[in-house]
Length: 372
Image 1 (cartoon, rainbow, N blue to C red):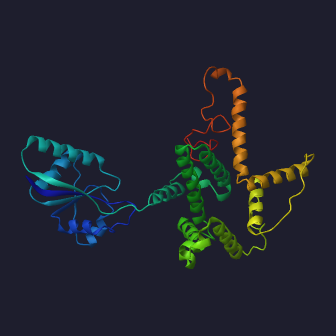
Image 2: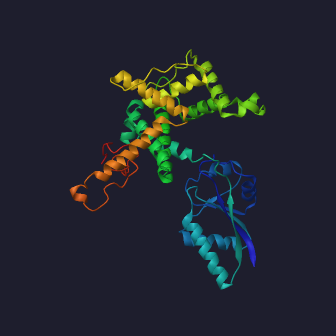
Image 3: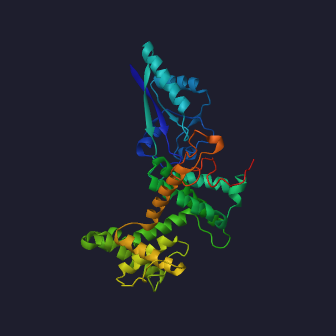
């Protein structure tokens, strides 16, 4: 016979306490008993404010499981507030106890329900990264992280961006996921550093607000009056032309040359310049090319190669990286193995140009100083 009910109430640690679904509030208000184990459970202030009384139990998992089941077996609705970090040991103990009770066929077996009081929305786990970074930069955190500045982090941002490119081009999904995380870390790290600026502080929420506003304003065909017009506004070419027009107006640019980052790799810079000129309808003659005999001639030849790549729909930067990887493989094929690696593979990371993709635990760089 089934009598009574034990409700395990799960609440997301990423949702503000008290923001529970109607089913959760209904069961909390109607329950005869509400129990919790975490000393400072985040939901307690909200429950107290709502007039829901809760008491603490600190029994070991197996004893606690038996106690909760016994209480519910008496016909009561009993609620247990799960630890936001998870109550795996208790959940296992309850499952085992129910199995034993059912097998024995004696006593009363209460109904067991797992109820989600709040849910994580997509992207909610980004809050965990923000919290970790805040901890690292706060007093008592990591001295290395606390010492960093925007300037000192530049090298890591560049490295991580290139490692992400490598992951994309080699097609390694696990590598891609890891490198996306490393790039995301750099964004959150810089935002945390910026929040400490005494004069012009901004935080990660300001960064997110800015990019959201930019995305909305740059996509009038999705969010604005053009959203239902269809036609050419739905073509990629029209979208690119719209972006160029909007960026020119926003940033006060007077030339298609304006805004091309000076630190961009040369091939990528050339491709961007040629692309902007083409979208603007400018017919800019390329310099004549021949057998290069000096730096100027070589530069003009390379510019012509980039123009040919654009005409063929090929990314010249990616094409050259692929060619370099192929040549690196050819180079490795003719290299003698190191004396201490004879007969073994000495290139575990064949997708990179060095001895392999880094495998150290440090999230930034192998040269980061040891902290003990």
